[in-house]
Image (cartoon, rainbow, N blue to C red; front, side, top):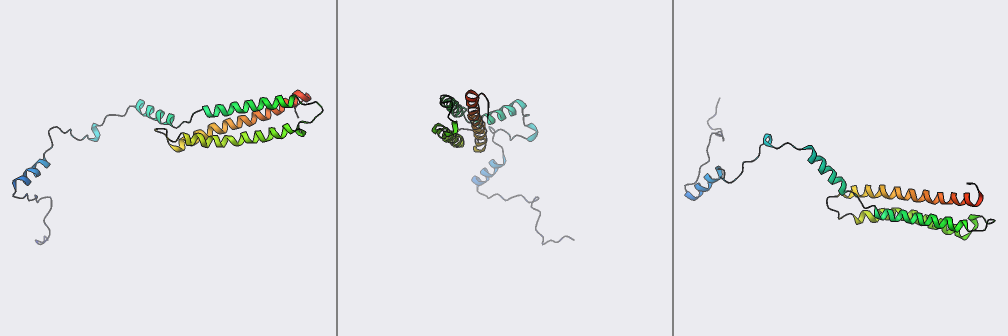
Length: 176
């Protein structure tokens, strides 16, 4: 049952071109490909991706998400200086005086706490300073800064405690 009032099939109908010759020339030029234009690549014609290129791109992106070690190495050097000064100041105390009763001990505790708090501040400072690095993500930089900062801060605090144990060993002949 075909109804003659139904809409004609759009595939069978050809568009009517206006009788103006300029419009007809433009319409014809749209249907023909340009002679200088390259054909659009077909998915089957795509060049295979080289594994080396993918690995090189991944390595480049991973290298971009790195903050510098220099601020953390300077921070670790400060911990070494602090531990050395602590051992020197406590070793030169009179043998009869307890270390925790001296004013140097209170300064040592405050300096150690200040250095330990400087670690997270250094992490934030290096992270913010590295934001403008091309090809890097803020989260990758944050993770790298947190990792380096936490390792160096933990090492510095451990150095501080080792320094206190060295003082006990040197002064008393035993570790408390």
